[in-house]
Image (cartoon, rainbow, N blue to C red; front, top):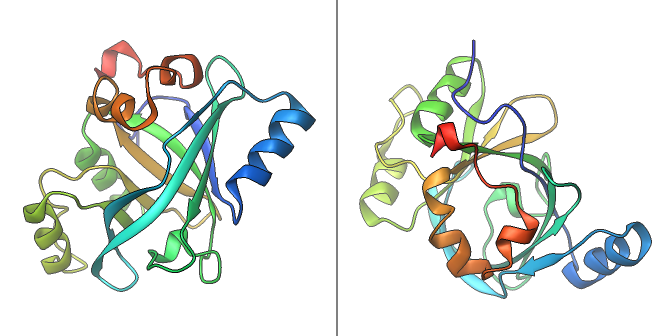
Length: 190
């Protein structure tokens, strides 16, 4: 089965307890860079473990590893809620591979059909948040599925990132320097 995503990941991401320490280690020790930083933001995410929608305070940075691959560090505010996959105390896996997808719902459905489990999804849209919490385990994935994480059973999570955010939301969140850090989605997925 072929999943309709880019053939290679564009980023490797992981949770860290201290973004500045992780960034400094990889920048000074391994020459990773340049970097872009989202700053602290609150996002709304559906947590598949609890089937609830949470407002999560988090910060992310991307550092360029190669022309085609970046590293992402995510830090979640210690005082607030976090989906299981972003909770260092409870997460089964803290690392993920990020793939561009034109249609995250179709790509996620293909992974679910192959045995993966949807474990987290961005749920800023109220209709999507309601559809995610109302969905039963055997129900189809909801329309408008945004960025999401899937557990594939191999110890790594897969993050599906909609290509539609490349020119807008991603740049708004990280600034114009994003072009120097992340590989753009393949043109056949735009």
